[in-house]
Amino acid sequence: MDVYGLLGNPVGHSLSPPMHEAGYEALGLDARYVTFEPPADSGAAAIEAAETLGISGLNVTIPFKQDVLDAVNPAPLAERIGAVNTVDFTGDTPTGYNTDAVGAVRALNHHEVPLSGTAVVVGAGGAGRAVAFGLADEGLSVKVANRTESKAHALADAVPDATGHGLDSLPGLLADADILVNCTSVGMEEDETPVPADALHGDLAVLDAVYTPIETRLLQDAAAAGATTVDGAWMLLYQGVEAFERWTGQDAPVDSMNSQLREHL
Ligand code: ATR
Image (cartoon, rainbow, N blue to C red; front, side, top):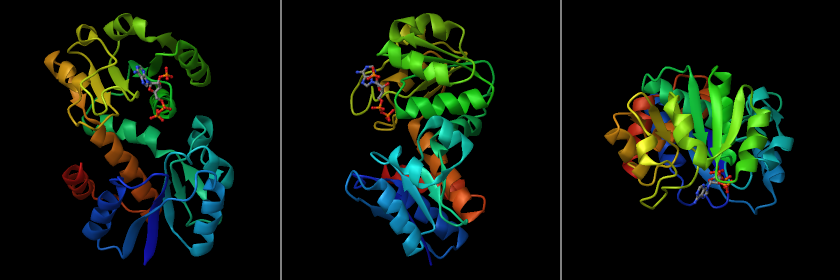
């Protein structure tokens, strides 16, 4: 039996176990997905232990995404982002990937959103960083807007063809934009949005990384403006799908994983 899992603290409410196990079941794989919650400063030790125990793959979440970077051989994109959320132990050395970046790209692809033109990324934390690199690598021109403007500039300096802005620039930036991604926590369990509703328009595709609730205020405003909307469960799904495919070497059964994920939301 192959063992996969999630390394984080806390991991209690993770949706990854039912999502991945739905995938194993659909493909008839003899595998399990379990959660591990080591103390906050032990990410590197946990990777070593997992390798010793013969674990096949780990997802990594808060607070370990940066610490784990030094304990694995990072893929180029994970190294540039500076964070690892997926470790593959099936090769000679543990390899670290960042599937958050690819997750956003594949969520947009699933909705047939053309990956060209300009993307506005709101937020410059861990999620904003991954999404900004992911979209820039697809050839989009990226505008990062963040409450703390200095962080937007710092991120934009690291990403090719990107610029940094404060949130007050959003209306001007969005007028010419094709894609908007919310990577802040605004809207999580609250009826708030980081983007003024009247700045949204029908030529935008809007992805919200927040998935609690699934129809955030931002997505409701975007739908009302005639924009294409992509909810945060798609991004969560596709970071998992990408990890699943790296570990198993097989195409993930996306529909099975998606329906289990949405059942547990
Ligand atoms: P994550 O890893 O999920 O991206 P994070 O690194 O803590 O989380 O980043 C949170 C992001 O949400 C940041 O961009 C933060 O803005 P600041 O850099 O100014 O802190 C943004 N954020 C959080 N609360 C916000 C709020 N009330 N209004 C606007 N932005 C907010």
